[in-house]
Length: 140
Image (cartoon, rainbow, N blue to C red):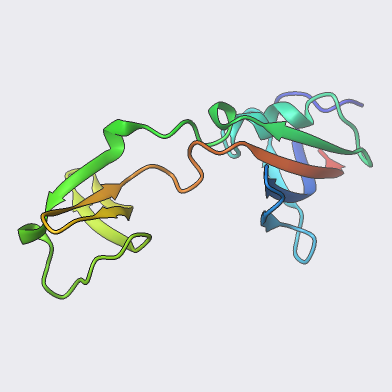
């Protein structure tokens, strides 16, 4: 029977960016198990499996909007250099954990100048189209 919303599926996958760089795979471990439509995976991944059956092997391109979303400028935060703790030597690409009113947030330094740094709170894969080679291994 074709997969539909509400089914629990297990899939093996290889995830790549458009340039072919691999960012994740399940082959060496257990397949990814999730309930279709529950929000456990990115929306495009949910949509990709609908209509497929056990044993199907297929590829899908998921645009950024259906993956981790587009990069949001509102999630870039300039911080004056005098507010950066002296124990931190800021470099572009450095990951930090910062406390907010909503809890701890992981950010990446995306700019460093003499006067400030810019923290990026977007998901690391925001703004990126994702490609997946999928194999459906179980449906419950």
